[in-house]
Image (cartoon, rainbow, N blue to C red; front, side, top):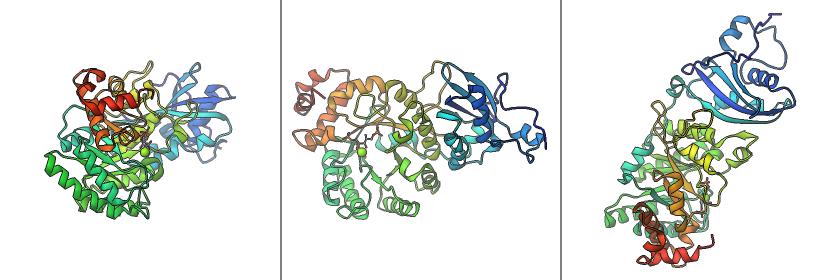
Length: 423
Ligand code: CAP
Ligand code: MG
């Protein structure tokens, strides 16, 4: 049997940042961390549970990953994997390696993939977003302020005609981007094709009346052939943006859609991500999902609000959205430079209403989409008043005027502040 001289552990090893993928894991195991790390490194690359007669030293030297950091206190390990282990441009293959079998191993009690650092050589195999932050802002002609978005509510239940009419109303009252909710696709009472036709007609009308550009994000979530058909229909009817539920459809389908080069903004909804991102000891960090989404071609991605109804603390969301130095390593994320991959626009959504806007912008900055669902359509004065209140809240914040002061001459904002004062 061929004898392999070296293990995977080498704490003196200096990773080749330009030719290796660095994975950071948090590991809970009954085994000593270094031992568990060796087994994880093997299973995620070239090895298995036993020595192999088929594995030559030559192959090992060329392809074996190196565990170069072990932090006992934080239970963190870092492994450098040679690029030769990875197929160019394939998120599925990357996931099968670094987020695959190792999660099922009995030797680990809990495992979490915290980060993936990908060299330019690997990144170059992907197209990334077609528009990214500058592209989306250019289409809307909005330079620096937050883009004001709204999800039609109820999530599902309105007809295509009602949906289109509502979109028109809130566009007319200052909203920039209107979107379908994550579970509205092609339903008996609201067919996709009909929705696109009716919405597009009213989008044209409102753009003409206001002289402003508007976006509608159509939810094309479905099987790959169906998604493509829907995206092509949106394109044909003059639409600019489609939405995919990235966890439900899979990042491979997002990549596939991006590769069609349809010239459409791809909006990424992350419904379901918490199944594997929420527990801080298990699964995958949202940061990794955000990186992969950007790689796959998502132009604008839901990343959390900190202040709203969804889970996601300040450190996590700001790390994903913006450039930030962690206490012990640098992270890449949506707005930062990342080889030739364009930056992705973060979307704050979930439980937002006008009163939360100053705090939200203070934490996340103005370079984002702020989405209001219930916090717009739940306004006591109806959706038109709700839209005005949301716009007024953003305006006031950007002018650095306290909301209460702005509300004195903006009745819709005043009503919203009173109505949601305890939320
Ligand atoms: C928001 C929303 C979004 C969530 C997604 C919803 O509506 O439409 O899907 O924000 O969460 O259905 O909850 P509301 P995240 O404004 O009425 O809350 O952005 O964190 O992925
Ligand atoms: Mg939703």
